[in-house]
Image (tube, rainbow, N blue to C red):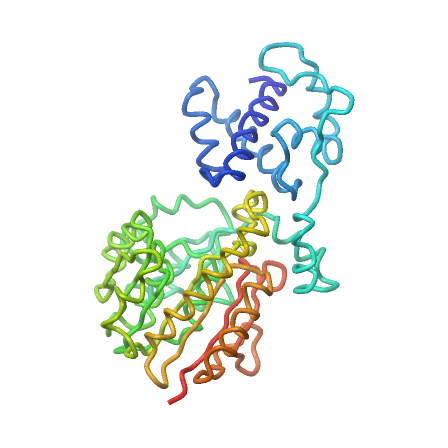
Length: 399
């Protein structure tokens, strides 16, 4: 492919990504893979070049553009002017020459309607935090304490370094094909962001406890909880997404985590399916569906998917799940609320609203990621902590 053909391919990929972002379709990675699945003539260098341009454009354009062409034109005009020379219309696989007055997306870090909340969160540090949020994420691994120790795995893998935030965490310093590693195939390591590892550790799950992971997804935090519990006790992983929850069983087998029970829940009817656990859990983890603003390093097109209306629906779901999870906690037990969001509306505002509605709860203290005295809530961010962005809040039910 010529450079102009690569630019046109990037435009075509971005057209699909824009539509998917608007309509709730497939992720950018999936769409790029599908695009090249029908274009076998494109070599590995072509695919890599197109992918890199697509993601450079996505990271540069905060508002959802009207089209892939508008996005690439806006990016070229502001960031990489040499690209404009490729828009000459000189062939069927070459971008057409720009037309005066046609749409061009303006570069920005985030949608304008979100900037007030992000500025409320970070204040004077907002520019640096947003820059970090749109950088490329590292590859983090969690060493499975049921099968291995971090130091031994670090020696075996070599191209890794320990993560201060996560005592079982290792960060890749070179290229790692994780699925080809014996340590992965044997269940000694899992891929997991350091912030996600910290969230699981902050729950302070202990051997012999009854623990409910209410929004388990594919089970990354569930597996970390099983390791913290020394594979002893009762650990129930729940989700409403059958496809994601189904991924947990083989992962648990590989990890040697035998205490995990999975429950597929019907959306809106979770309480009925969990009635047998009412008032019995020592710990309930609610890793609630959220805007994903803390994961923009990995999913920068998520900025294009989020709207005020969608955020309002997510907030309502977070409030509902807090009520569902709270009913499962025994007196003296604890509830840990986690979102991979950096918006105050999805974080401390939800805990404050919960505390206002339920008077039999008080703050519960967990490990401070910055060291020092324990805290009942905290924010993790790429700039401050080198991990995805998270809000964590802890509460305990009054005896």
